[in-house]
Image (tube, rainbow, N blue to C red; front, top):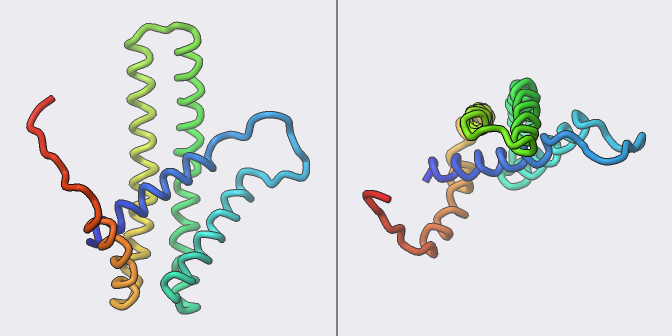
Amino acid sequence: MRLAFLQNAAWAALAAGIAFGQAPGGKSNLDAPSPDQGRQALVNRQLEQLAQAFDLTDSQKEQARAIFEQAERSTQPVRHDSQQNLDELTAAAKAGKNEAEIQKLAQEQGRLLGQLLAIRTEAWAKFYQMLTLDQRAKAERPHEGVRQNAPPREHTTGP
C-alpha cells in the first residue's frame, strides 16, 4: 500500500515537473512570473494541499517545505539538461538525423527523466516517513478503493 502511494505521488510529481519544467514559449510577458516563481507557487500549492489532506502540524509543514524545496533545487540542473536534450532531440528529428543519433538522444532523455523521478520519489519518501501513523493511514485510504475497483492485471511472459 505504501509503495502504491509513493509510486502515484512520484508519477504525479513527475508529470507536474514535466508540465511546469518546460521553457516558456511564445511572446514574452513582463507581468508573467518567472519559471522559478511559477515553480515556487506550485510547491506552495502542493504544500497547502498536503497540509489540509493530512492535517499537518506547523512543525510538519516546515519539514515538508524544507524537503520539497530541497528536491526542487536538486532538480533544477537536471531539468535544464533535460530541456536542452529535448531541444536537441527535436532538432535531430526535424533534420532527419539517423536513427542511431535519435536513439542516443532519446536514451539520454530517459536517463534524465529517471533522475528527476528519483529525486522527487526520494522527497516523497522523506515526507511519508515524517507522517504519523494516523496520517499514513489517510495516505493509504484513497488507493484501497482504486485497487478494489481496478480490473485484474493480465500477466504475460513475452511479447
